[in-house]
Length: 49
Length: 282
Image 1 (cartoon, rainbow over the protein chains, first blue to last red):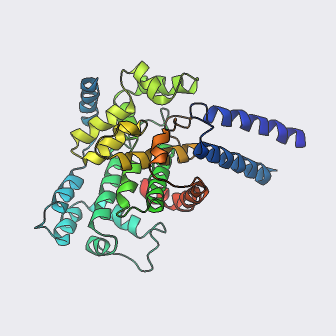
Image 2 (cartoon, one colour):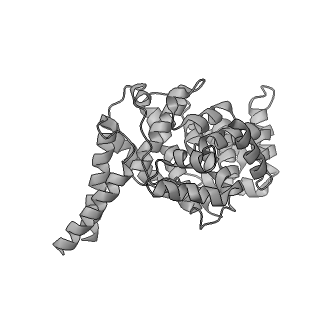
Image 3 (cartoon, rainbow over the protein chains, first blue to last red):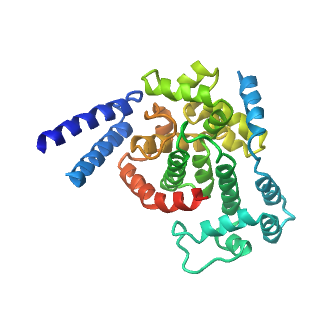
């Protein structure tokens, strides 16, 4: 189960990289939005787990 | 480049109804001799629009404690300006109902646009602006040009969407490459053809390049940021699965802290389901 969750997390990470591909990740606003997207994915994983 | 966009809009206009009731109501709004009764009389001539507006103002999104049964009562409670914006919003959503689902899921498109509307208004409130309902309608219609492309050039619009999906840049770049101009120019041309307020034209044209805005830089910058917030949270679908590039000057304009972003997203999520249900139901 944990392997599957890790695999899904990897997919989510790739999806998130693609999502933020064209904007400057070093800007504080984008950094915060990136963090929020990450937290949202993690919370989805907890709900699905 | 503006000529092809205008020609395309003319083609699209043959397929969709212009918001005539909105134009009449807006004329009255700008006429100092008119009254709220005149405005409600115009709206009452369109029973379907009247029913939809009453459904919206009685929805959980507004959350008024008692039932609002007439347009004149709605005007008293939410004001003529906000009701006029609702007339425009519902008319545009209705006008573009015919876009095929295999091109874009319109429920997802409006979910993204309505989220932009809520985020724009909340951001404006955080920045201390008054009369924030104008930010709502600007946020809602910022991608109106995409609808023109879907309506008039569905195959090329699909090619542009697929090109952006395949990693060939953001949607505006793909549209320029495939069609010759992007949804921003198409949106500005539609706003002009329908004689909508100039601020909506600037938002449509410059929401991805806010530093180029001339008359309404604040409004354009707010919508630019709201679109990025909503895209980053993957709410709905604007036609592009990427977060648009941030223009840092737009963010610097407001002197707000990035710590407000979770709060704005919470507000969007809290209101979005009710708003989407009532605005997009047939």
